Each structure stands twice: as C-alpha cells, then as structure tokens.
Amino acid sequence: MSQRNLTLLTDLYELTMMQGYFKEKDANETVIFDAFYRSNPSGNGYAISAGLEQVIEYINELSFNEDDVDYLRSIGLFEEDFLEYLRNFKFSGDIYAIPEGTVIFPREPLIKVIAPIMEAQLVETAILTIINHQSLIATKTARVVYAADGDGVMEFGLRRAQGPDAGIYGARAAMIAGCIGTSNVLAGKMFGVPIKGTHAHSWIMSFPDELTAFRNYAKLYPTACILLVDTYDTLKSGVPNAITVFKEMREAGISFSNYGIRLDSGDLAYLSKKAKRMLVEAGFPDAIISASNDLDETLINSLKIQGATINSWGVGTNLITSKDCPSFGGVYKLAAIMDKKTGEFIPKIKLSENAEKITNPGNKEIKRIYSRETGKIIADLICLTGETIKESDSLLLFDPIETWKKTYLAPDTYTVRDLMVQVFKGGECIYHSPAVMDIQEYCKHELNTLWDESRRLVNPHEVHVDLSKKLWEMKNQLLDSYHFTNS
Image (cartoon, rainbow, N blue to C red; front, side, top):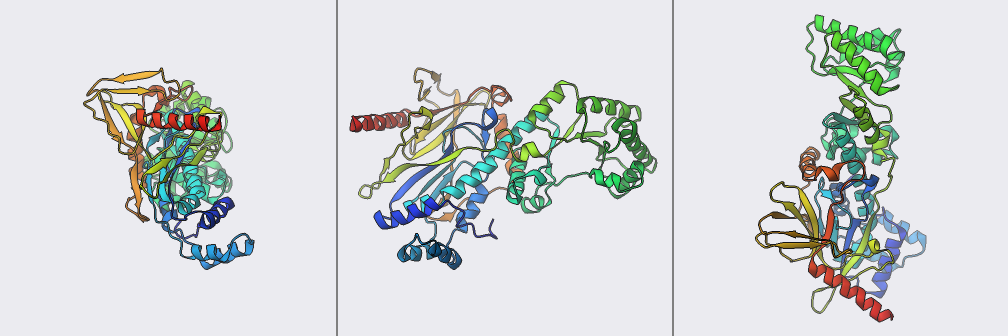
C-alpha cells in the first residue's frame, strides 16, 4: 500500500463535494462520520473486522502530488484555488476504530472519523473499499474454519481472486480469521504468515508415470510430502503409489512429520474413507488426508456429516471471492457537526421509510456487555461518548425498535468493555497494528466469546445491538422534530 499513491482511489463525487465545501462552506467545519454495515454476510450471526492496517497506511500516505493535481485540472471541473488547496492537503483529524479480528455486528460504528468536513469526505471511499473487502473475506473464512471443526484450513484462492489486490489482502483477511496458511507467497512475505502448498497434476503428468513423479517429489520434500493422488485413478493408482513411496521413505529411515495425500476430485466422502482404510492397513494411520475442489463451509459440513476422513482442507474460489455473498455492504454516514460557538457536536440523522436505514446520530462509542459467569457476549450497547456504565449497578437493555423487548442484568453479573480505540489524533497515527498472526490469536479469543447458537451456519441466534437510553431519546427527539417541521 505504501508503495502506491492511492490518493485518487476515490469516487468523483467526493472531490466535487470537497470543492463545494471549499467554495460554499467553512472548510474547517468539524464533523463526525461513522462507517458501519447493516446486515451480516452469508446469513451469518456476526462478522469479523479486518483491514484497519491498510486504512492506516492509506491515511498516512494521503497527499496530492503534481500528477494528481494536473490530472484533476484536465477534467475541467475544478478551479485553481481548490487545486492549490489540494497541493498542501494532509489529513489532520481523529479516527477511532474497532481493532482487527474483533467480532462485530450490524449498525455499530467500525470506524469513526472526526475531522474537517473536506478531509472526512475524501477518505470515505477508500475506507469502505478496504474495510468492506477484508471484513467480508474474514467473515467467510470464519464460517469455513468453524465448519472444519478443528481441522486445518488453507487459503488457496489467489488464482481465482478478482485481481492481485483481492488475492493479497484476501489472504491476509483469511489468516486473521483462522486459516493455518496460504498458498500466496507474496502474502507470506508481506504479512509474515505461513505459506503452504503441494503440487499440481502437471507435476505428475510431466513424468513417465505416477510412481516416478511421487518418488521425485518425496526426495525433494521429505518433510512436506503431500501427494496428489487423483491424476489417473485415485484408489487403483494414486493411493497405492503414495503408499509405496511412504514405505520406501520409512525403510530409508526418513522421519515422517508432514506427509499424506490430497484429493482434488470425485466423491470426497467415499474416496477419503477408502483411502483412510488403505493407509491404516499399510501402517500409516497418521497420514494427512487433504481435500480441495470447490469447497466451502456448506460442503465441508456435509462431508463431516457423511463421515469423511479428511483432516486438512484447501479452500480457494468460494473463500477468496465469498462466492455466495460477494459484498459486505458497509456504508459511511454523517453523524454530527460541531457547533463553532460551543464546540459541542450537533447530532445529524438520515431518515428512511426503512427503519434499518435510519442512522444513529451523534458522537458515539460502543460498549460490549459480557456475562460475568460465562464470558460470552450478551449484547453490544451503542452509547453517546462519555456515558459510563458501572458493573456494580443494574443494567436494563432494550431493543431500540421493538422497545418492549427488554433484558435486565443484575449488579455484578456482567462486565463491560469499550470496543473502539483511537487510531489517529490530530492527523498522527497513535496506534500500532499487531502482526497478522497475533491478530489471529486475538480473533480466536473473540470467536470464543460468542455463544454456539450465534456461530451455527444456518439460522444463527442474533446478538442484539442496543442503544443507550440517552442515545435512543436523542434519536427519537430528532425524528419527532423532523415530523414536526414537515407537518
């Protein structure tokens, strides 16, 4: 990211609005924008936040060079005084965000930008494209890893990704959400994550016969010897030849540390069970049985139910593209404008006939409520900044739309955690992004705070995102005021 100038990675209307603010408003007017999403992808019960490190890189490198300014001049939409302003542009605001790897839910701010209106407007598109993509792939991966139920999942999707960036940063998101490795060598170098792979059918076909191909591969990679057995005939040729090579390795005194077979076609449940029996009878009960071939969480779950003996999964196309749900749907909405006289934020709200699309106004933060006994998430509570909750007091949660639905929490039965952290202060980054594998460990812990009912693949239990009483009252006062104004 830092090697490329992504300043113009934006929609044209962000720049035309910027010029409008520059000409018609106070360009230094401070505003708050919230980035959030409205529904979980793939019918899931949660999502996983990802992409914050790339947002930080983007903000740090944000500046208009002479080529950018010359190009914008050539369009014919922008005047010289505005172009001159862009020459000296630098982000000067504050950004708060939910850390990567955190379990997240609809309608709560993932990123909050507090900045002069021109700056806050410009960064909208890039923030959304980065967060939407990586959060989507991380969420899809979490579903696949959950279906694998403790087996290793490898990300194999680079060649099917929608271009290099999707492959690179999709692999990063997949590692955050629990993959044990990626086939993407550049992602391994960039993010310090394990890279894994076997060989293709072309390796087998380039030798006079399958057995010779297997022997040569085993000679080169005795400690990573996963043999692809379905080039010709899985059970009559591939598995028997693999067993022959394993026996030769054992007789040669080679220590087995990572060996087995890979299935890439056919009835994976049937073939894996037959192959397992053959491997056990030959004295190789611990051989890995890996599978690929258009896998996703639904197929993996089905194969598990059928008793497949697969214990390693290579997942490509359906993961890296989130094939069943190809977009995350994050949005970026104005929440408040600072009063120049008082320095206080005036809340703003977007109305809609669809209740889910009515925004939550004001300067907000998120508090996660856990059961003290189990450590599981009870609900998330969106509050106005500065609100406090004492765990020694009782707490009444209520649905902000169906308000008769209430949950009473007795004193000292719950714990509270603030979700958002400050990332930028006065335009300077004050947050250090953890390494990807450290984020993965954090994400595993996060997933364990979900109830099993919220993690199931079909019809998961919904974790409630509620509003504090103060925020709910502010929102309804704004709604009433608009009805009164328009009556």
